[in-house]
Length: 239
Image (cartoon, rainbow, N blue to C red; front, side, top):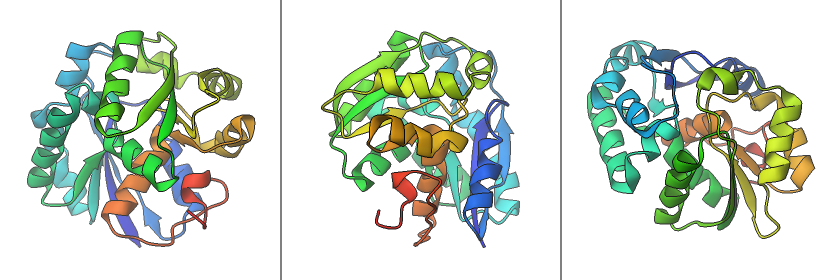
């Protein structure tokens, strides 16, 4: 049994994670819910949500769960600090947890490389200014962002209510002909149940926040051979 501890902000789409557990044998994903504060995709709010103190508050519970790695299961609450600031955030989390640590934001970088994508498109639920910060983060990592779409959604609660058709439409409209993968960065968005359909809709890898979060935790825990035909190219055997 591999245990990946997740720090998840508030309550939105955390039911994606039991779906992943059911598809990957021998995986345990304990979740500690962190304080979200105000529900708003606004830079100042996101920086406070990802503060060292709020993340450190949950690490003892994850240690007691037997976690082998810890992932801050939030994309925007990491990349809003910028490339260097996001690294500092994760170093502080690793020190507090005494475990290998990362965030969903870095998971996207590593996952894009894993599927061989150097040019990516971003299909975001965020407001435009927050999406632009994600684009800058990816570019700082050496990825080329050839297209991005912002949906101008402010709250996680609204994102969590999106249905399958809305998610598929987001990916289709956020795709770009030159992109080698489409990135969907909000952990408040339900995506795990739709991954095969999303990739079929655009004919390329689709990396979504909750999918990438689990993959990043497994990468840190050095678990090899975690694959499923239902979790997209990222979890395909050949990847």
